[in-house]
Image (cartoon, rainbow, N blue to C red; front, side):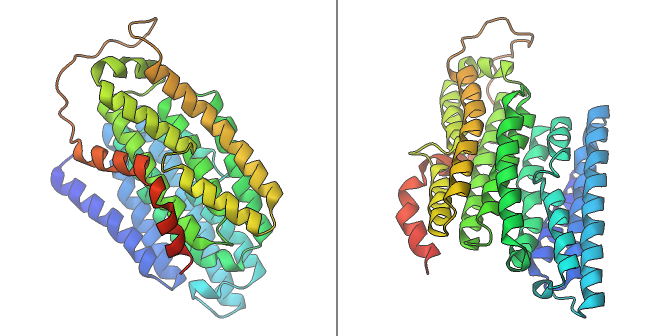
Length: 349
C-alpha cells in the first residue's frame, strides 16, 4: 500500500476514535465510529486475498448494523425524551437498543460470531489494530451509558462472554482465532465489573491491550499462524519463545504476572458487591481460557522441532522486524503485578 494512503488511513483511524472520546452528542459519537470503520476497511482488504476480502465484508456489515442500531437508539431517545446527550440516554427502548449495538461493535457474546472469522482472514498487524485500538471508541460509549443499563443485563453479557471465550478457544488450532476468543473472554471480564467499578474496567482494558499487543507482535516476529508452527519458534529465537510463553500465561491470569492483577481485583470487587456466584463462575471460566493458553505454551516450549509438521522449516535469518515495541509491551505484560498496591491506591482516590 502507498505510504501516503496508509498515513491518511491511520490518521483517520485515530481521528475517529478521538472524535468519539471527545463527544457528548450522539451524532458526533456515531460519526467518529463511522470514520473509524471506514478507515480500517482498506487496511484490512489490502492483501487482495479472497479470505481478506471476505473478512472485510463481514466486518463492514456487522459494524454498519451496529452503527445503525446506535443511530436508531439515539434518535429514539431524542424523539421520546428530547435529549441528544450521551449521558441523558434514559428511555428504556433506547437503553435496550444501544446495549446490543455496542456488544455487536465490540464482539461480546452472544454477538461475537463475526470476530473469530474476521480475525482469521486478516494479517496479524491488522488483527492487532482490530483487537486493541478498535475497541476503544465503543468502550468509551459503553462506560458512559453503563449507569442507565440494567445491571443484570451487564452481568449476564459479561459471564456469557467469559464462558464463550473459554469454550470457543478450546478446539481451535489457528492462533488468530484463539486470540479472538481470548479477546471475547477478556471483554467479558471488563463488562462484568463495568457498573460497579468503571476504573477497574479501564485498568483491565489497558492491561488487555498491553498483553494482546505483546502476543500479536511475538507471533508476527515468529511468523506463526497455527499451533503446529509454534514448535519451530524455539529453534529460531529461544529467548523470544520463553518470553512469549510467559506472555500467554499472563493472558491466562496466572500470578506473578501482570494479567493476574485485573482478575484478582475484579473478583475482589464482585465479592464486595455481594455477587459471589458471578465471581465463582467468572473464575471457573478463566480456567477454560487458561487451558488453551497452556496448549500454546506446550507447543512452543515442550515440543521439539522437527516433528510431523506440514509447515516448511523457515530460514534462520536475522530478524528485520522492529523489536522495540515488542520489548516494551512484553516487559509491561510480565512485570506490573508488584504495582498492585499503587494501582489500588489510585483507584480508591
